[in-house]
Length: 259
Length: 228
Image (cartoon, rainbow over all chains, first blue to last red):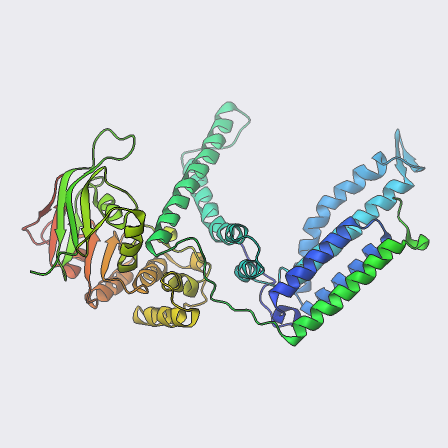
């Protein structure tokens, strides 16, 4: 097992776009759709996200699997929100009553989440993490944040291996998790050991970097080239987002949500 | 006589919190062109010695001269690290860039080379080590042997004048070991190797010494002769 980037490889239009433009559009998109209170904007966002997805020509099965993971969380919202949101009772289930406003609200959340996830899959997941870090660096995102992303990506796998090694070492000596103090203590040791080891490793990595002349700045091998299609992509996307924003501000009564 | 590459004079070093010092009035000399093996039991200070040379650890007292110049401050060591390469025991500590080519180019970029030249140097070094085609491989997905060879490439790409290797063959298979022997035999710079493998040392160094708390004692017996 390792972290995979199933969407990063590809030759579609979206893959060939400059990552910087995609990051900007994805960020604007996510903010707009996240704050909207109107169904029209949420549905418009969903349509736009699906358009990006179609342009990225990603393996549909993988995309659906990802969406299922996200929606499994949203699934639980459907059990709670309609029953706790104040409003007009639509139907009763014993002492519980689902409100109309609650159902509308939960539906809005579902559409918004899916729109944002689809847009992120189409625009951000199509950039390899490494390139993403370099693009963020070029966009003047604070170096520390960009480095944090790159290092997390690089070492998460190493920690996973270390974790597995420790778990194996516990298993081969007959450890089976039970509900008792011994189990809790052993897991606490495991967590502590991982922490200590990661600290040590961080230090050794830093030493190795020093030995190779590191002095606080990363130099990127990649140079991004902004091309005509990137300009077109950015302009049309911003235009579409502005239209959605207009929809949000004007609040046409037909599509208004509960809030 | 030409100037020694490394001169360690009356070094005292104790790890923080440790009761026993690692080095007490320790003296050491490495001459140009020397190929030296460092042996000794675990904990005798072999790795510590390499880290002192690189400035990753600082002695409590004593002086270290590298290429004839005394090194004291971090600024001096920054210069040292441009000319001395250290291959770490654990390749996972050394390789931190996502792809191989970026990792190999990391050192040259730090030396101020422009990206084009850094990539050219990286490619040349990899070719020399038989790693052509590894450029875009992801470092954490390499095998143990490949990781070690790539680590060696990252150090050699900086074109060091002196190479320090910390147990370069531990855990490697026979084929990779042979490749490392072959690479080292083709180098025209001085190097020191910490190793527990007499057979490996007998192929790569002319002399060995035993690291003690006070000095490095030259070994008279050929390193392949018996288990050290």
